[in-house]
Amino acid sequence: MKKLILFFSFNFIYLQLYAQLINPYIQLEGGFAVNQNNTSMVCAEFGVSYKWLDIALATDYESNSLTNEYIGEINIFKDEGYNPDRTHNKEFGFFTYTSLQLVAKIDFIRLFTSKSRHSFKTGGGYGIIRYQEAWSTSLFSENSDVAYNLTTKSNFGLLGSFKVSYEYKLKPKLVLGSYFGGTYYPAVGLLIRSNL
Image (tube, rainbow, N blue to C red; front, side, top):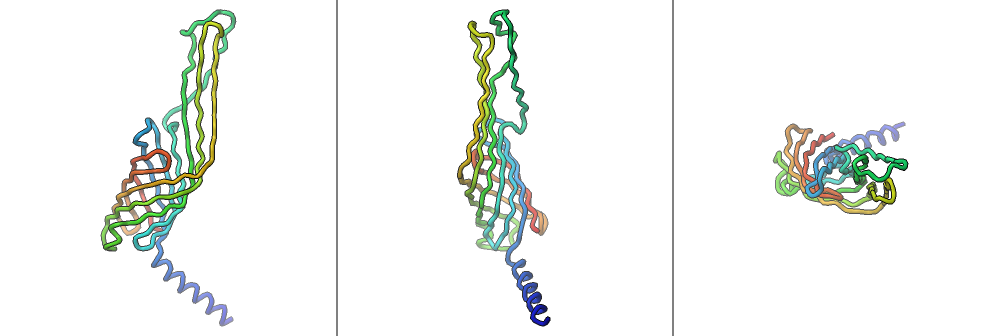
């Protein structure tokens, strides 16, 4: 029984010391791509901080269909001949990607001082990405009434990311900031972080 009490006491002390050195956190990000129209990005990150280093597991989702609704419509005409004014088909295309990455970031301000409320971080990650795309084409000719095609593709792969962020500590466990970077298309956005 004494060995069991000593074992649990030792583990409790070890975990208390460990918790003081390594701080877990959750971070949420949202923004818009800088070089792709109507493309939004959201990201969730769960990690730990040790002095000036963050190591995390991040998942993000980027798409140009977050703010749009696409409806594919097919018109089939009988023997009335070709009339382009009667068609409502519009060509469209959209993509989404989802990734799961291991991320590491260095806080350059905390390299020199641990008492600042400001943080300037840069880092990157590497992981699995799933890219999905759908696009349509519509061909109208006098020989055929309506021709319409919808194509989709989906790929898996490995891809890296890069990100730069500025963060300001509002409270001991609450941080707000902004970032630039991402996985597929670079984005600018805001972040909120809660230290656990």
